[in-house]
Amino acid sequence: MPLICQTVFGTLWLDVEKRQWSTKMLNATGLTLEQMPALFEGSEITGHLSADIAKQWGMNEVPVIPVAVITQQALQV
Image (cartoon, rainbow, N blue to C red; front, side, top):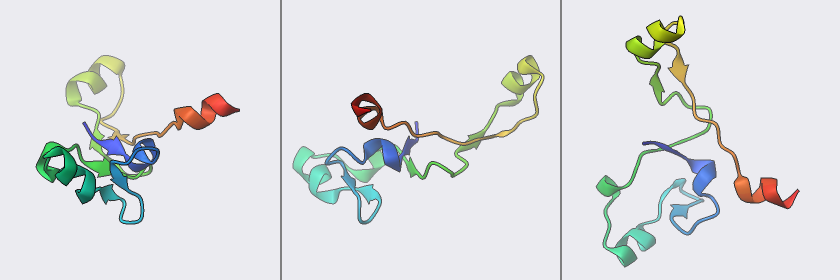
């Protein structure tokens, strides 16, 4: 499952400057980039609605674009 960069900003897992997974954190936990989900910007197309679902919903096979919600910020309002 792809993750949106904005959803991991508040963690140490993201190297914010490079907008990629932190090699420091990966090394500290023994994980590799191959084990991490792909990162996407909130406006990037990450896939398309499957033909089966599109047919069930009476839609075209439209692009799927993630939407980021910064829960911590929303709760502070």
